[in-house]
Structures are given as structure tokens and as C-alpha cells.
Image 1 (cartoon, one colour):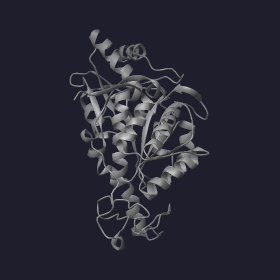
Image 2: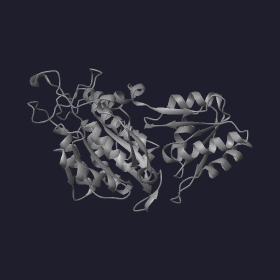
Image 3: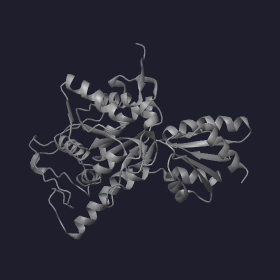
Image 4: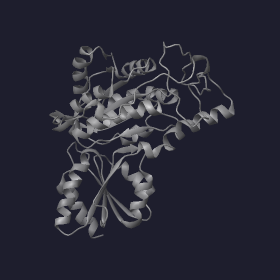
Length: 378
């Protein structure tokens, strides 16, 4: 049988990926440039017996998603910068209560209402630190329409596997461009489904911090009774101020992600073996970076690229290793400098330079190439 190939918009591919992953609940509020996801799912979900809700605002949208996830649904919401800002309290609640869900942020210019609807990459640090307190987060940055579909499936898998909110960070460019997409057969991709715990209800401990394993979240209504609260809580979910419980709970929120980083992280290296200059680029900017590399190599400048696909947790080890052999690093971003801070923090003696465009226009290959020539002479 031949491949199922379609021409798709980025937002359409994310909706399709969600359906393949088994998403059975969407709640959201229209906001450009993410609105197509809601529009598509409002049509498709009810036709297959699944649930679509348009809520009254961004806050209630994520609240509905969390409620559905506690009931065993695979749930997603879609928004952009201002909406993600409103969702932050619930993102923190999802992290604390370990509620699996997927949150799509199709980034646009900010702050505040900013530039609707023009592309930006200004929400990278918001994804990591937008809500208060210490917690880990998983965030994914696809760079193509095809990758958007497959990374959405992976986002659902990671959410269920590690009981955590997972953010997908695209931007207006990726969300609205159209490219060829290979639609996978469901039997050809890994799908991690919500399942009942392998213990009886009376022995169920939803927050087993010291086991080293993520306990499956028992869907409410299936006979498993437990408490859900944003307060620090013990293994049954009830609040606690015992020092050992607080310590174990706080450590667990970090450890379940960082001790499984090899399973969570994903990245691409491109022509790094002989590179004298390394580009660190992600999302739509990495597309321009790839063309700029071809231009630079044609001119005799050896340039390679490291592209984080999982942006949080940040690929610290890989940046450190590359910086030991490549002493000039250029980070092009559609923001005033966010990922460059992580690159600087993890580089081992390399000089790190930035190229920052925040006009609502894409960073072009020519702009990156000109900066490469400038860095090559330094």
C-alpha cells in the first residue's frame, strides 16, 4: 500500500496528529494564529464521538482540559502568547497535581496583545518559567508541517508517560504554511494510551514519590479514590507540611523529567563534524539557518547546525560537547535573546553571538549568512 500523503497547513497537521494520538477532548478559546486547530477539531471530534468545547475564556479552557484529563481523557488546548499567559496558574496546577495534557502555543509577537498575527519566538522562557515555583516542563519545537504532526503524537505520549503538561511551541510561520505530510498508519507509530493502574483501588497511591516510577493516573469514576490539590501533598494526594514529604514531592517533580532526559530529549545535528561555526536554531528559524549554511559553505565557510526539537529540558550535554570543538556559536532567534542564554550557560569556552529580529518578520537566510560572515572574521 502506498503512503498516505497530503498537503496540509501546520495547524491542520497538529489537529491531525492529536486525532492519531487518540485525543478525545479539546477545550479552547479562539486566538490567532492558533484558531485553525480549534476550528478543525470542532468539526472532527464530534463526528467520532469525542468532545469539543469552546469555553468563555482561556483560563476556563485549560481548566476544562485538566478536568477531562482527570477523567481519563487525552486532552489538548491551543492558544497563543496572551492566552498562554492567562493559562499559567492552571499550568502550575497541572504540574503540581501531575495531570497529563498537551498545550499548543502558536507563537506571535508580544508582549501583551503584541503583533497579531505575526511570527515570533518570544515565549521560550515563558514555557519554562511562566508559572511560579520549582517544576520541570517538557516543551517541543517542530520546524516543519510534517514534524508538527509527529511531534504532536509524541507530546501526547510524553504527557501520559510522565504525567505532566507538555507544551508544543510553533509560530505563525509553521502554523500557517502548507507542506507535504506523510500521514502514518496508527499501527506504525507508538501510541501510549491512558490505562488503569496495575494495583487494586485500596492499594493505589497516585503520588508515589519514592518508587522512582511514574504511577499511572487512575481515571476518576473507575473506582480509584484519591485527593487532588495544588498544595504540597503526600502519596494519597492529601496536603502535608511534613519536611520529608515536601522534600520528596519537590524533588519528584524535577527528577521524573530530568532522570528520564534520554527518553525525552530529541535533537538534530546538521554538518557539525567539520564546522568552524555552529548555528543553534529552532522552529521556523532553523529553516532559514539551513539555507544560510548552504550559502556559507559555498563561500568556503564551514558552518553546521544544532537544532533542539525538545527545547525543555534544554539539551545541555549536547551543547557542552559541541562547544568543546566549535569555538564560535551563532544563535538566531525571533526574540531579544532567550535560547542564547542557555547556550552561553552550557558552552565550554566558545564565543556565543546572537542574531535577534523582533519586527514580526521571519529571519531570512541572507540575514543569517551576513551574520555568519561577520562572526567568521571575529
